[in-house]
Length: 195
Length: 262
Image 1 (cartoon, rainbow over the protein chains, first blue to last red):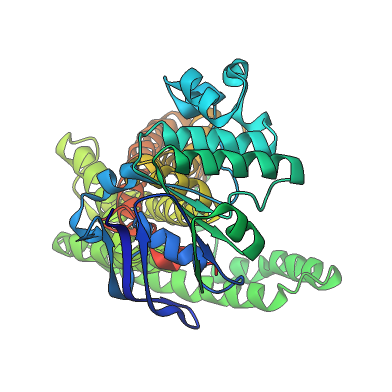
Image 2: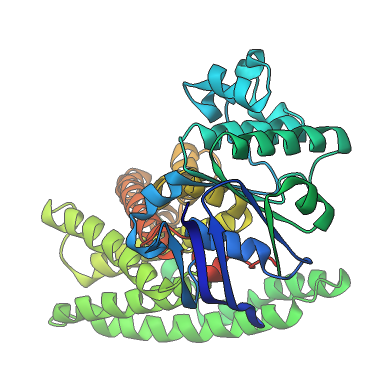
């Protein structure tokens, strides 16, 4: 299989100089790729380039061999779903957040379908993170981009979300995950890119 | 009826400085640190109003009506600079402020003049214009700063919405709406309680100048309705333009609105 994403000599400037500079890497379409590095290394910044929440100041990012800027940005974002570090439930019920395919998606992310009628902001952090994953999967993406998906979770829910992420990658989704924890990267990912 | 307007000379104005002294004393005793600002404000108000008084005296003399648009333009300029400064951090804040206050003034004064509700004289257009402009200016400032602050502090949610494929307008929608409400609500509340809590400026002025209360309320009603429309327009224009400038064309939150994490 070809590369799903490729970074080519990417530089992103911050307030006090470049956050990442001259970064190049390839991310294959299959399995789970982890980006590992200390905090401040620009991991989140690199993820934001994949669904164009941000653009590089120089260099290019390719998606399926084409510059991400050549895609319709809204279509790109639907296909490349990014889920952040801290779950962000929107106002309304879980069902309002996730949409009509809730029952099927709930099963997929391991949430009881009965919580669909609950207000989204009363969920535990672990449940909320799963709900956010369900919300993203509801858009039927090709890729799932995860920014430290377990850093806000306790040990028990962390293991659960890790298993879920692993199973999504095994189910055919391209999964790109950022983590500061090399051990998590090693035991979870098919390949690791160190920053 | 006693006409107060002729009774106040500069001697009376000087005596009323006692009131400023009270404010300064309070600030000093309570260490609010506003004494200097208060003194500066007092002198500025004196100088500014004196100058405006001369200009208006001169302008209201017959034959100088043609200058009215220029006076209004100068007022729009001042309102633009003030509001533009409050919108710091919003790209093009000054242009947004200019568009908002100009739209508000042009539309409301235009309607009042076109329907011949008020006469096309400097004596009507300038005071009404000043009221609409100062309100529109405050509204534009509020809407711009509120949207900027809300989008910055809710950046996570805004970007979560963008990440799900929402457009900038959809992702910023909840805060756009609340900024509009913030901008318009004060004038709506004022309109509701007018006369119950406070006698508004135009009416107070007419009463003090010796007009009948009945004449005073008629003018005040026109003023209130004008302010309602003008404020709503200023909020609409400021909100729409601000949203456009806080996102890029590619539905990204502009960089200056976020502190990029590592």
